[in-house]
Image (cartoon, rainbow, N blue to C red; front, side):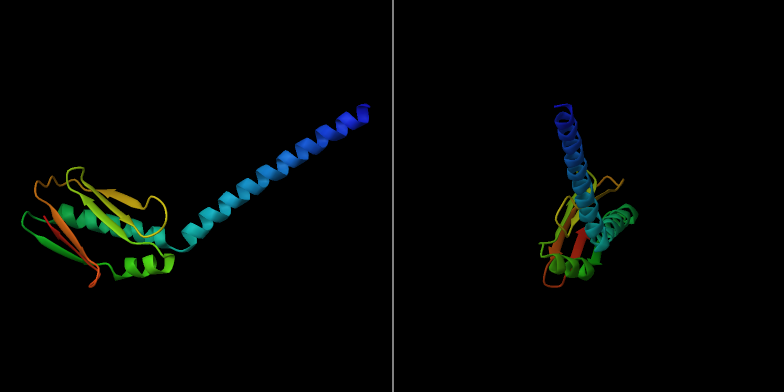
Amino acid sequence: MKNKVGAAALLTGTVIFIVLNVIVIAIMILGISRVGTAATLYEEGHAKQIALLIDAAKPGTTIKIDLSELYQIAIDTKVEPEINIDCEGNKVLVRVTQGEGSTSTFFTKTEDCEFTVDKQKRRLTVKV
């Protein structure tokens, strides 16, 4: 009787170990596949670039940024690109893949900030 109880405990421990290993490996593969596309680097880079340009701009300045790289990544990942500038919260959000996207903050306080995304020309226009 003791041998059967010991074998059952050993089998249960082995099954739990295998299941946990499969979960960890699946999480690693998902993370590597997301980083492997370099889409996150483009999201982060463009979010920081837009935030830095807003910080450097003087009031009344119009900034135009080419977004063709982001649109190409969005086409590849079959996701609608999202670029949002929150002037009250001083945040820039860029998302071209499934997930949260990349957020960057800027320090310049802007009362009137307008932005438009021209999907045909793949261009972002920001009026500070």
